[in-house]
Amino acid sequence: MAVLATEVLLWFILIGLWLAASTLESSFRFARPQMLWLLAGSTVVPIVFLAMLRWKDKALERFADAPLLLLMVPHISPFYVVLRLVLFRVGLAMILAGLSMPQYGVKEVEGSAEGIDLMVAVDVSNSMRAEDLTPNRMEQARLSIEQIVQELKGDRVGIVTFAGVADVHIPVTGDYNAVKSFISSIDTDFPIQGTAIGAAIKTSIGSFDMENSSNKAIVILSDGENHEDDALEAAAAALEKGVIVHTIGMGSPQGVPIPIYRNGRQVGYKENQTGEKVVTRLNEKMLQDISTAGGGVYVRADQSRSAVNLIIDALDQLEETKLDTGMYMEYEDHFYIFLIIGTFLIIIEACIPEKKDTPPNRSKLQRA
Image (tube, rainbow, N blue to C red; front, top):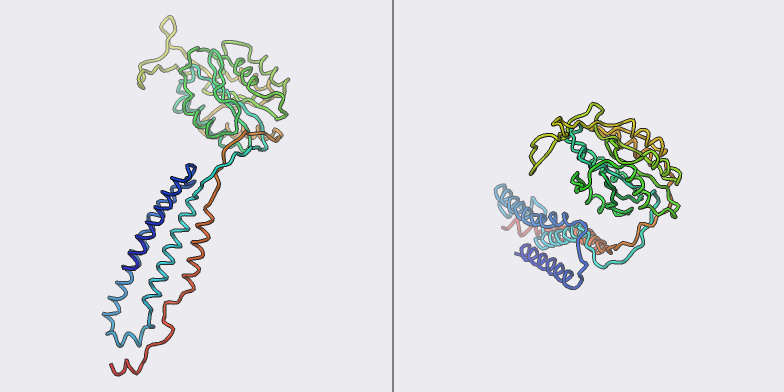
């Protein structure tokens, strides 16, 4: 009964603390809420203990009668056994609660880091639906951007999409979560079709704070079918301003038709005015010339990370400078209170013996 009462009281206190904290402090949260499942699962500890204790008693009863057991087995104090269980159970609960990282109270912190400013310009023209990369060029471009962002540490990054024109969707920022959230929404449903790589370079440069001394770079993901402007001139102008231009080729030089989808199903391929299928090819020479004019490197995307790794290596060669990543809200941790209490209780539990201080009276046992 004591074990059961302790378990009920423990959960009553924990739930009460949670409700009180949530009510009194709106910022209260658990930074690692998944650990709460372990806290809930720890309920099995007293159940397992009681089951093992009952099994042990049954085994001893089958082995010998009570008077003989007192001589053969050290006398165990039920009070100490229960006390140790209670201390261990509460201590374990406190440690698991601490590992779930309870936080309350927020403060505004000015962020800064060592890094570079990077703009990723991704082609969203219809040709990016081509399936010479698995599953298609657009999906592979999204994956490449995710891999690039995943490798950034302290850098600021932004995203530009372009087809017939270019738009800034994410200005340079240190908020990688915002960037990652946007990546999945990049698609080829751009209202003005075309491939204006030059406009993408100019728009990317315009999004930089050119008065900032940070090193800057642009990474362009495209099939290189530039039909709108002078991309080479734009890349050369970027280099003159100290902005390096790298390119990643999406697709294959052999060329494939452009699929057309309606309601998620392919209904055919894009055709020209004469009814022939439009074939899109990777223009490697154009992308190589752009990267050369921009002082960067060119790589062709594939199913592995090799292309992204080469771009990351090139970005790592740029000297990092101190960047202002803006103001952000930081939660205050209070997990240590629970960890200290839990550890203290378990240490006490380990110091308590299960045996009584005085041995049983052998003469009484002999008379029995």
